[in-house]
Image (cartoon, rainbow, N blue to C red; front, side, top):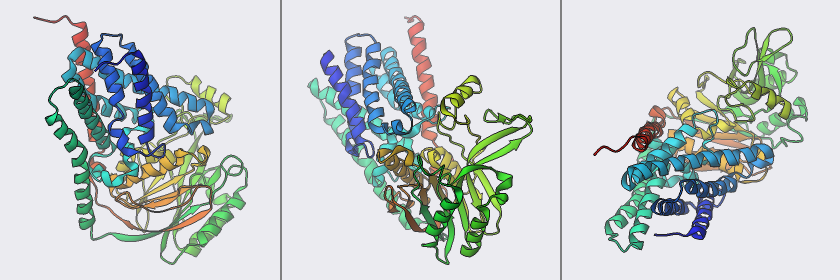
Length: 530
C-alpha cells in the first residue's frame, strides 16, 4: 500500500467527507462511519513506512478533521462568526493531537502495539474532551448512531463510548483487511472478524431491546406532561418583546392541551428572559399569572429563567462586584413552581464555552474582562456545585438545560440521584434552520436510551418532542412553528449499568492511553538495552 503526495491529499479530503456524511443530518449515511477512518489510517501507514516527517501526519489529519468540523458544525457561525471560526480550528487541532499521539505510539512501539492503542487513544481523548473547561462532546464518534438507535440498544451498558469503540474496531479491522488484500496475503480470518464485528453488535442490540421491553418494571407510574414551543425569535423578539405578552402566549398555548391528568407543564430555556433576583420572584408583575395557572391546572410548572443571586463575598469566578461591595452571580436556571406554590431553582451546570463560560479565567482573570468588552455580556455565569434534581409530590424529574443534554455522564448522575423523568428545556433558534438543532434533538435520544427513561423536550422553536426509553421519537414539533405537545409518559426508577457507573469505558481508556503514551516517550528518550 503506497500513496504518493497527491493521493494522500485526496485521501485526506475523502476521510473528512466520509466523517461529515455519516454524521446525523450532515448526511446521515451512517454505514459510512465504518470506513471513515480508512483514508487517514492509510495515510499514516504510508508516511510511517516511507519514514517521512511526522508533521505530515498532522497536516493530513488537520485537513480531514477540519472538513469534519466545518461540515457538521458550520451552523455555529450563525450565532457567532468569531466563535465559530475558533471552534473549528481549536476542535480540529485537538483531534489532530489525539491522532498524532496514536502515530507517536505506533512509531516507537511498533505496528501491532500501535494499532492496539488506537481504541484507547480515541476513547480516552473523547472522555478527556468531555471533562475539561473547553469540553465539547458534540462530535464524539458514538453520537453518529443517534439516528439509528435500534443498532445500539446496548448503550444502556456502555454509553456513547461503546459506539466509538465499535467504530474504531471495525475501521481497524477493515484497514488491516485492505492492507492484506493489497499485499496478496491471506484474508479469510480478518474477513470473518470484520463481518462479526459489524453484525454482532446489531444482533445484540435487537436482543437487548427485546429483553428491556419484556422486563420493564411493573411499578411504573403514568405521568402526563404538556410541552410548549412558543416559537419566539431569539434575535428580534425573545429579549425585547416584554414579559407580559410572552407570558400570556405561554399560558394560552398550554391551556389548549391541559387535561385533568396533567402533572407537569414545561416552558423552554430562558422563557423568563429578563434577569431577576431569585428571592424576589414573588414581587414580579408576571408572578400572579403563573400562580393562577398552577391553581387552575393543579399541576407543576417547569420553566427556564435568567436569575441572579447576591452574596456578601466573592463566591466564584462568576461573581461580579457591585459598587456597594456586594457580589452578584447570574444564572441560566430551571425554575419549578409547585402545586403548593413553592419555588425551587437549579442552575445550569454545563455552560457553553465562550458564551456562558470563559475557560480557565481563574488563572487568567483578564479573559473575563475581554469577554465583557467584546461581547457586552456579563462573562461567566454561575453554576451548581453538584448535579441536582427536582423532587415533587408527583415524582422526581431531571431538569436538563440545553447544552447539558449532550453530556452523557451528567444525565447519568441525575438518574443515579433518583430522576424518573428527563426534562430538556432549550433554545435552539440561534442556529437557524440548519443541522444544528436537529443534531441536538437527536443526541437527546441517546440520553433516554442510556438511562432507560422517558425524555421530554421543550424548545423555544423546533424541535420539541417526546422520546421513549428505547430512543424512539414518539412525537415531535416542526421548525419555526408554535406548537403544544401532550406527552403520555411513565416515571421509571430502575438504574441501568451506564446510569450506575457512568463512562467507565472512557475513564479506563484515558488511563491506559496515558500509560501507553508515557511508555512510548520512555522508548524514545532511553537508549535500547541489548
